[in-house]
Length: 165
Length: 391
Image (tube, rainbow over all chains, first blue to last red; front, top):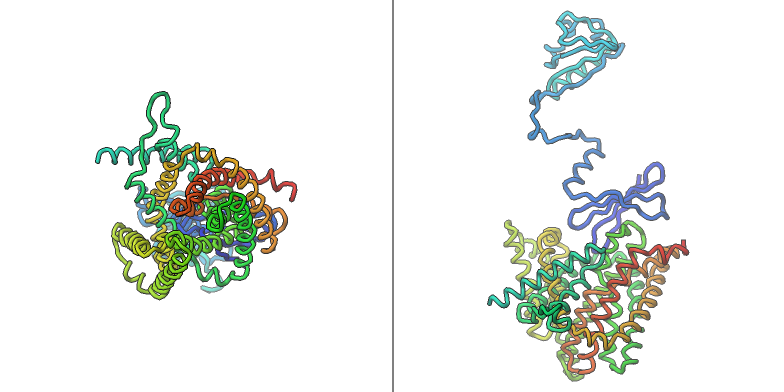
């Protein structure tokens, strides 16, 4: 992919990105930090202005474009019942090492620190499952834990049966 | 003291009101500010329904604030001066500027000779009719959403060259005006170029130190330092007969390569806009509409001929930079507006020793800028009427 960068005298800089469809995505960065977003249908078409962003908003929008984890709201301002913890949905693949085991045997809490708050199986939901609940392939675990714990859980679930055997 | 404060208050209120009106109707603020000066100034209209409108006189405060406006306008021009851009686009820019200056300047010369104003008058008219308004045009291009189109680069590139030509031109004109006689003028021009050369060198080699010297935390101290240097160097220049505006331009260039540009743009721009508004207002104060009416025919002829010549030079510039017919036509349309620089040149003409120039050029410039600034803004907003058949 090529990004064309040109000076816009007295204004700032212009960046132009040709997208897959041939439409061009044009960004003008003003000296004062303001960004204007334009779209151009093709090389000969006139640019159509889409957005006007200030520097701070532009940076946030950019992190969304970049695919970086975005924070939908400022966490300080919102009462978060879970504190640092987040809730995630993890599906158990057919070849998972923990498929067929009970929650206790799989050692989810012991090994990852995450807590399974519910198990979704098809249309049914088992809330607050006991330690003896047997996990089946295709189950979706509703897990609560910190980001690190969620990550550990995901890798545990993704371990296929062949690896541990 | 209360009187001066009252006049100043009226002046700013009038500017705020006319500025808001202009904004409301998508017009440039420059003609609006001039009109504000005309309305509350000493010349007609002096009353409305028995209420006096001659509220503000052109006193010391207005004079000084207007002067600051000129200094800051040119300082910002210097600030945006990008030597790297000039060098990398040198050939193209020289071509654009050359065509623009020759075609439009020729019309200025013809107008001056038709009026019998002589070579000095021609020098003034050339500058007034040739230089487009960077302020109005950059704003209009942004508003119309043209900035991302290829013709904008040609338009803005042309403006960059025009601004440089005007800076040099102002230096010469100011020296000639203050020199008086031919030999006096020659010495004065030589002297001012020596001063400016020294200033340019200091600006160039001082850039490294500038960053250190101006690296202060609190914003207000930073602003004071920047404005202090720009105005003091301008005053020093004026005391040795050099244009204070051009001196401020060079001060601006000293900052242009530093990391301070963004901070200055952010903090000093509002100050520039306030004082520049007073500059346009002051021009309005000095404007007697009856005198402008006396040069109405000249204004009309100049507006017609220089609109044609700008459209032609812009079209040629567009073609030279590889644009198609429609976009080239837009370059001409985009460059129609005249504004701040034409008026700065006219301010200089008001100080000329030649009565014919002193009496004709300033009112002409005001009438001309009023017409061309509005025409230029409207033309950009409604370019489709003019260019649709070229598509």
